[in-house]
Image (cartoon, rainbow, N blue to C red; front, side, top):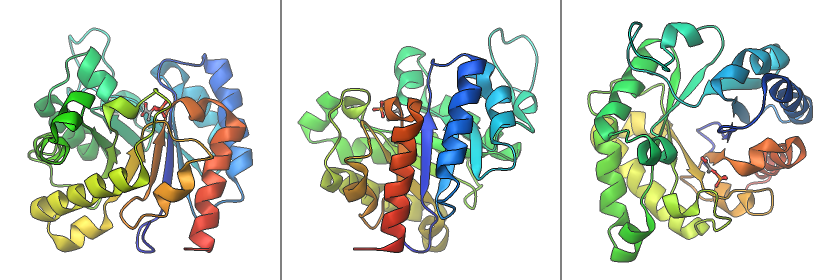
Length: 258
Ligand code: PEP
């Protein structure tokens, strides 16, 4: 992590928690992470739990994000949720999570449209990229994620308001995290790609998170790396104590850099 970028720990609750569960989880995360003001803490409940979670963290240092958003403004898009429906409830929007790409066929172009729509609506997009196991074994991880990022940010101009998450598909929900070296290597490459897209100065300010089986025992060596600014956390974000410990470990490292 770099002293010029605020670290961020974001929790993706996926399709878990009722509105009541989410309120409780959000309140516990807010009270547990209150002491760690140097870390941006974000929770991303499912759509039905956003209002209750936002209410529970109101006035705390925890912010709320959506797991997805339509690029369209309104109309005949059954099952979709637009920016205007999220306004006042969230600050961040995840775009292009690998589960959206893989299970719901979201293309890079669709992700780029969502990122631009989220930014235009005043939200900070968290744009996710990551290679699958086959690609990594072929030795194509670097070129694949660089071109994925380029295409997922096609037409994007909000460089002062963007978070990128590198989430290798083979590490998500598997308990098998990438090594911090592997993550730093790819994230360093993604920062180079951002330099090409946005220029050196803007790229230096964009936070890039690692995601994939992060927990309180393995977070330290990730956020210790120069280009890794925090984590996008799935499974471990559903337990308040564990998620808060991840925030705490990150805050400690901020106070005592290696
Ligand atoms: C995720 O879904 O973004 C994720 C990183 O999941 P997990 O932490 O469970 O691997």
